[in-house]
Structures are given as structure tokens and as C-alpha cells.
Length: 89
Image 1 (cartoon, rainbow, N blue to C red):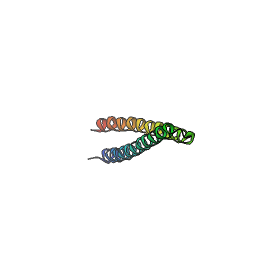
Image 2 (cartoon, one colour; image 1 turned 180 degrees about the horizontal axis):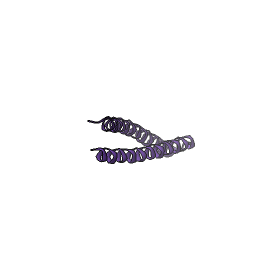
Image 3 (spheres, rainbow, N blue to C red; image 1 turned 60 degrees about the vertical axis):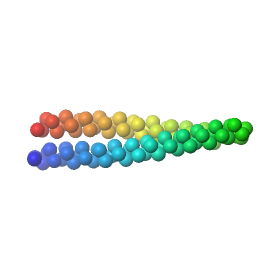
Image 4 (cartoon, one colour; image 1 turned 90 degrees about the vertical axis):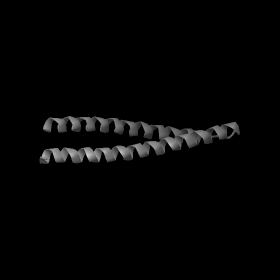
């Protein structure tokens, strides 16, 4: 196998690892959102002020949007690497 193909394979391997990390971050952020939403509902049912939870939820949504953007960019990178590898074969 040529050095170029090995380099592309290594980049693909690293991208797959990055995908796994991103998916873990997305899962954690979603779990945080669910917990905060449930707590918000409970607070509202009890008539308690919960604006701070809305702010925290907003921050989590922004984080989630950024994670999904990173995942989309990584998917493009993987596709480009696959095409490069195919061209080298």
C-alpha cells in the first residue's frame, strides 16, 4: 500500500474516532436538555421561578447546534477522504 493511501486511511480512522466522540457529546447534551426540561416543568407546576433554567436550556441548544455543525463538517471530510482514497486505488 502506498504512503498516500496509508495517510488517507489514518485520516479516515481518526475521523471515525472523532465521530464517536462527537456522538457522545451530543448524547450528553441531549440528556442535559431533557433533565433541565423536566426540572423546568416541575418548577412551573409548583409555581416557582425558573428563568435560570430557560437560560441554561438555551445554552445547551446552542451547544447542540455547534455539535451538529461539527458533525456535518466531519461527514463532508470523511466523504472527501473516501473519494481521495478511491482515486488513489
